[in-house]
Image (cartoon, rainbow, N blue to C red):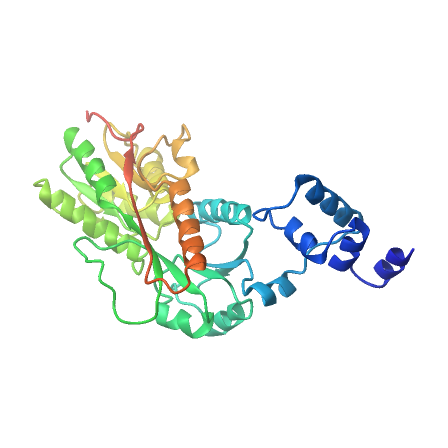
Length: 349
């Protein structure tokens, strides 16, 4: 009766669960942490009684004691594009499995971020922040994050060293693009391709700049002329129109190397439906990312693959390593890319 009366006035407490289960307050806390040792039958009893009383641990109170909020901020330029939505989904799932919740923040269209929004993010006191955009600088984040060390997903430019500028501490996941691009160019060259058009992404994107420069280096090393660069924005419509312009106004190309898979889809549809050209017999197409839709039969796209599971696990490792060793120097993980061969590169007519 006492429990019922107390519940009617507010939420259940850990003390109420402990009294009902005849265990200590500490045991209740340990029951909700899967990484602590507790006899299985005692954990089961505590969790069952907690469910009966509709009790859940107070995260805010636990954060005051532990110093951790189990919140991870994620800064992205877009939340609805194919790659970002798939990566956010996979990352959120992996973080939840480790006991973290995700706070999602979106940049402006120029990839910068409103400082008022950063101040709002600081109010949550996240344990870590992952920045998928390079325009939100570490020195800017440092003013708002307090103890959290940001993680940047970076695309090193060809020939760049790993040296860092002096400034606030940050960790980094490096994505090396050369292997995948070299494999793509080798495949194209093997099928007799000589003229490659690079269908660009957003001009200010570091990933796009690194992608184009790497393609130029690889083509030069293989004795090929530089690519023709046509405008794009990582989107379908711009890619479609630029591809039409390339062949109706420009000199065309033997192959289109797109900055991402969605751009490649736009190029393919323009080639097939507007220009009445065949893929790959007339023009080969290569994408970048290997999003889920790339293997759909309508596209069956040859593309340079980012392994999504590897990326997500590397980010989770960086978070856990930093939390376990807050005073460690800058941490890094490095991943490569590889080519996935499907049906959009092949023998020319």
